[in-house]
Image 1 (cartoon, rainbow, N blue to C red):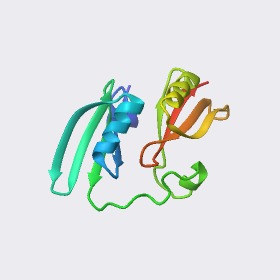
Image 2: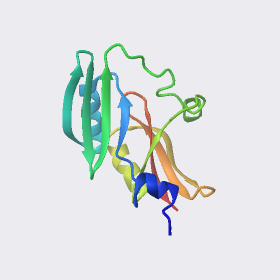
Image 3: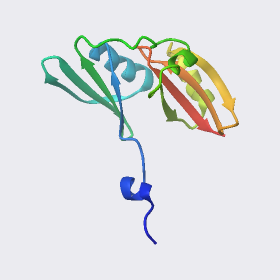
Image 4: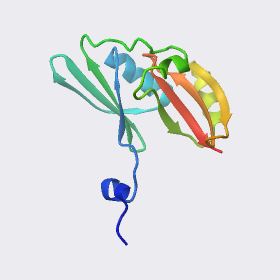
Length: 145
């Protein structure tokens, strides 16, 4: 039997390698992703005079933080969820968690800013919530229901 197109591209297991995020301040973002989400800094390099990158990981998944001097902040960062979705393109990244309510409790205790509280969306089979990172980027945490 011939492999499907997806299997020919991704192999037997498609999984994200990393999430790339342009940030205002690399050190601030490293601290945020470490302190609030528990990611571990694995690499940090200055690629050019005005470009620095850090890779933080948890269980083989990476968050690539990219600081480009004089980059512009996304005008919709930190805005209400539907406002962020009003511009086409990637608007959030979703992490799958074992228990949405437990994850929300931990993040709330750490003082993370919530964009929306845990909510069931049975039409797509998920319970989820959104938070903002230190630059106002939208992150989702979801559990299949």
